[in-house]
Length: 364
Figure 1 (cartoon, rainbow, N blue to C red):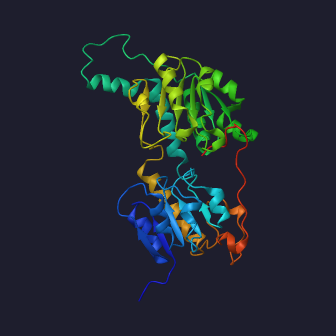
Figure 2: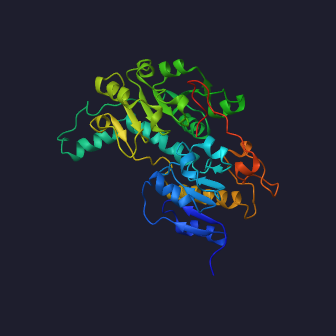
Figure 3: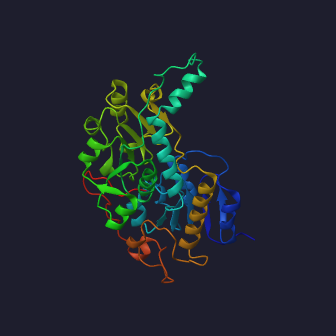
């Protein structure tokens, strides 16, 4: 007998034991190999599905859901969701969820580690050693910049930014931040952080860390003009999204010595990397792994599964997914407990733009 339960698509191989929980409620279609799906492939998969569990590899907007009349929910495995056209999905009445909180501390660990690696030239020194260049100890070998006692600048002071700020206290760093809006005084005290304008942040930071979500409003907000306002001894670390930084302007600054070093975990065209960055010795490059601990990645998938089950009106939180992105823009579900109906049935309205003008938004 055919399975008449709702159908969901899992777009990438994930933890089988966790994804298996979906089978209690749904007919599950799992993708066997990691890959980037073409637009037509995504549209074909979604056409007969009620829900989907996707990752940043999967770009989904109006075209991909145009012929998916049953689709009610998309659960993104990640705190960032710029791979999804949220206004278009909201217009279609599709619930979008993400996975905040569970990756905060792991990502903050990594952001601080990447900043330190850039400042102290750790990967550069390792390559130099492995290449057989270390023939005798020298007092001036691989001199980097201090982290302790310096000024940390955080652009995007959300959960992860706050986690990085708290770590800075152990290094006796002065912490400055800029955000779309100033944080409450109690959070500033907890983070030992002071709010400043964007230009002041650029001018005073010895180490700048980017932790803001991507939107068109912040595309290339760190451009040549912004970098020119930074100290030539400063470092720039990006664990947010690649499009926030003008990578050619960054390469210019690193090549010329206008900026001391950079640490990058995200890239505008990833997985393709700007070849100019690959050629530079003073940039630490990692493959989008800020949240990449086993425990955290499992927690992210588990939360995404919980979101999808609830958004499709099953489980103990039926109709009330734990971490919705666009719930306030959608009408209540028929059971009155949350979200989950399509816009053509419920009159859903497009989500408003989250950022107006070139102002950094709240972090991931």
